[in-house]
Amino acid sequence: GEWRARSPDLADIFMAVNLSGRQFAHPSLVGIVRDALDTAGVPGHALRLELSERVIMDDPAGAARWLGRLRTLDVGLSIDDFGTGYSSLSYLHDLPIDTLKIDRSFISRIEEEGQAALVATIVALAGTLGMSAVAVGVETPGQLSRLRELHAAGVQGFLFSDPLDAEAVEKMLARRP
Image 1: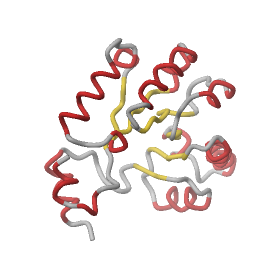
Image 2: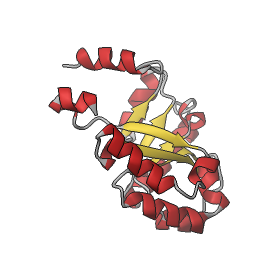
Image 3: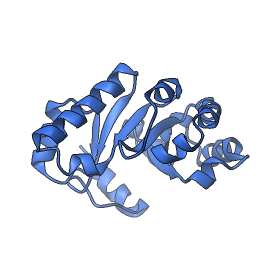
């Protein structure tokens, strides 16, 4: 909340938090998330919750119910490590998900033609379902170039930054034009 209060131009910034299967199954999850948002003084859309494909596919119908409840808080919802599990496309269509995060195993070989076709398919699938596709693990300019050609909605990886603590993020944001 502090960053937003100090810099109105950071209104589009959000924090992504990975949830484990155990955390996702916690009976008070929605209340915990609501309380965290209230305590931090940030709107729901400033938080993105990420779940692995495996966690969702353990109980797709239950996951859809929980995700629907979380959606009432206006938080973003992502499937992390997409492409490494065994998602049923019919369930994928029924989940209130905003983003498919393409697993780094696809991105590391994206400059190979067959692999690029797989990533293009995931990007197209996301778009067809009204979701965005974010590439995880981008490490080279060549990978970034290929992802731009494929119209990935977002990218993240060591090409841009190592993981940062809060203090380092503040310094980085202060240098932002």
